[in-house]
Length: 226
Image 1 (cartoon, helix red, strand yellow):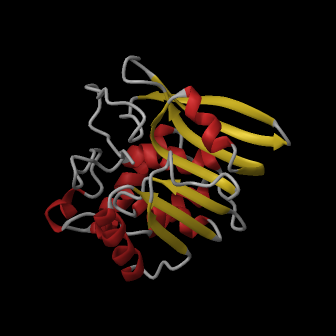
Image 2 (image 1 turned 60 degrees about the horizontal axis):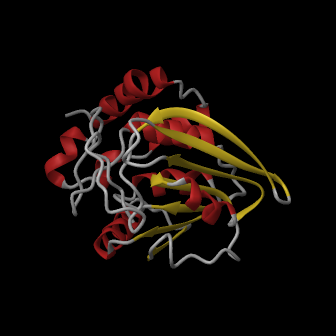
C-alpha cells in the first residue's frame, strides 16, 4: 500500500471537504505518518474515514475532525499547549509540530507509554506526557495558550478549563451531555482578563469526559474518555 498516496487522499477527500483549508494544518497532517500511530493490524486503515479502535474500548477521532480541531484552535509556533486525551499520540504529534511545547494527559497509563515511544520514534521531543485525570489532577495556576479537549464536557466543567487559559489563549472542546441528540464543538478565546469570546463551530457527538457522567452515549463510537 502506498502510504504517501493514502495520506494525500485523506487530505484531499476527507479533510479539505470539511472546510479545513489552513495550509499549515494541511502541511502538518501531510507530513506526519499517521500509520505510525496505530497498531499494526490497523495500519492499512490509518487514512480511512473511520474511527480506528484503541485499547479500553476507545477510538481515534476521524481524520476530518482532527483537522478541523487543529485549524480552529489556531496554534502558533510560540504557543504552549495542553492536550486532554493523549490516545494514540497522533494529535499530540500534530500539536507539537505546530507549537513550542505540548503537555498531554490521559487517564490510561498504557496510552501514555505507547504514545511516548511512538513520538520518540518520530523524533518529536517537545512534549511532556503524564497520566492524570483532567477533572481532579490539573492545577489552574498552570496556564496555556491552547487547550484541546477530545471528549464531551458539560457547561459546568468549561469553567475548569477556561481558568487555565492565558490571555489570548484558546480552548476547543465538545460541549454537551449524552442526553442531548447533538453536541457542539466550541471555541472559547480569553480576550482579556475575565472576558471570553465563545463560538459554536460544528455539531458532533462524543462520550463524556471520564468521571463526569456514568451515562454512556449510544450515538458515537468516539470515546477518548480521561
